[in-house]
Length: 453
Image 1 (cartoon, rainbow, N blue to C red):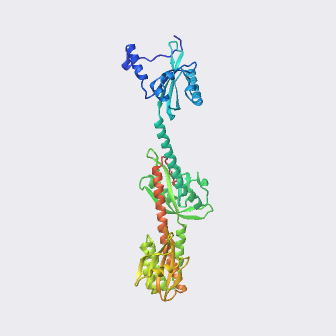
Image 2: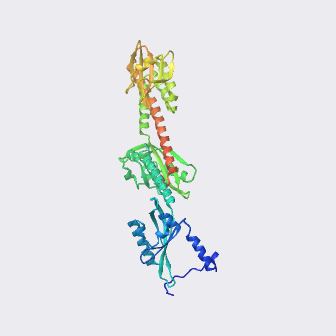
Image 3: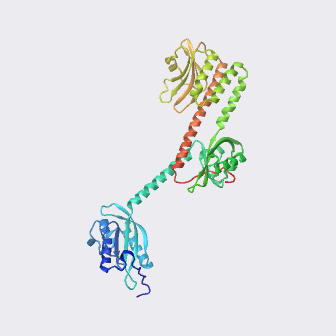
């Protein structure tokens, strides 16, 4: 026997010492099943020597119409060339070759297979035939592609939410280096998003020691998130007041691996606070104005929504100036003709006709004549659905300049509540989307704000 003849495996198990007829019966039963494609190919000319029922099922033709034909007669030129190349590898390497293959079945449907081709040796070690075993994995391939498509969709959705979030978002590795930063954060700090990649997150904040302590608490498991008001360094050197909400995210092994933060720009709120302080300073010129504005500012500071503070504001202003009635008016964007009145305060009906005759509020309080009385409209702010204003009726005369100034400040106080309510809503929605995407994303992500990682 040639030295190249492969060592034949010893029979084992059920076939140990079995009669040759028994062995042939088992092999015949194995080759006759149709759940896998089995075949043998002539290594000299590539013609089919044997095709099992699985091959017949694939080709939708009997074995007699398959045996003796080459791949070029059975498949497309591209597929046939792949078969030829693989056959040459089997002969040259004298070893099994595995590959993924596709083929059109007898109905014209594309099928996916995992194929193993192996040499069949004769007694002197010559490759007498090339055997093949192909398993149909079409359903698995379809599911795999669906999974990959779902993964790409989730990644795209996350990227869209991340990039277009109205608040800053940043992720860092455990060494504190930024690996992703969205456009909102970059704009907030005067950078481009790409400029922030690779920077140390800790270098962007001014109170490094406090941030390090928060990071320590997170890593120790003492808290799950931290939220604090900080200042960050703008690229041009000035400080930006922000609220930073941070969390430490685990990797697949459950160990801390990423940091994530949302950063809310508080400059508008700070400007509103400064404006409030200026208004209070001016209010010192009049004890009446001071008392009224102080009471309204207190209510606004404690209120979470305009609906909480509106009844108190309307009553205070109405009683201070002796006006008959007040209400909160809402002009919907989709139906701006007639306002909807809520929190009506005072005696006597507030005529719907008078309210409908009042123009939608502009930038400052404005008085309008309605019969023998006057109505003054104090703009507040726009919410998601329309424009809000305070409406005061039953004025015996148009308000003077001092009263209009006071009303303007009252409107600013109420606008601050609306803006805070809207900011809280946007932050909450962003947090919900942020968390939903993170929970659904197959990719682990994180942010570090700690010098020690």
